[in-house]
Length: 251
Image (tube, rainbow, N blue to C red; front, side, top):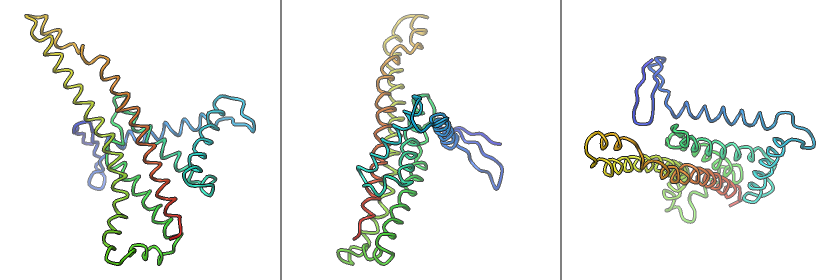
């Protein structure tokens, strides 16, 4: 097994079929899935017809909230289907993945391969819904409207949907990681600037203690890691629901 480190990513290469790289993204994504699975098992353990525990109240509140969210954006026909579970899973995966940055771990959503995979899956669902609603002939006909001359632009518009969703989510989370690293570096330089002028051992010792890195990164992390995580998960799921509900309309 070979191990190499590139930036924030650690690559484990398994010498099978030419070597299979296992990155921090894969490891942390599996960690998130294990955490979500464990949380679901804990919340639903020992459920009864009438809720008597706080765990069951929380589980029922989550189900009702997601169901109402889907109903408000897509209508009743989607509220009692497996699509509600899909949105709940997608929202949870996005939030938990992004929040790993709060604990110093590499968030899978800061890797384009993660958000691109989700976007491709959503794109397949959108295309399937369009074909199911309008048949193959209706779907192909829609690409030629309003005039056949615009067919190439319509195809580009179709393909731009997963690209825009993937880059929007990835860009916001990754930029937060970059900005956070730059702020830490800037505060470290400020610390050297403030205490480095002191003569002798006092300057050398005090300039190595990160006084300026206390407090400020924590406040900024509330936006870059917490607020941004919830917002990007919310936006990604909203776009998914809106695109699929629009695809279900008969053209």
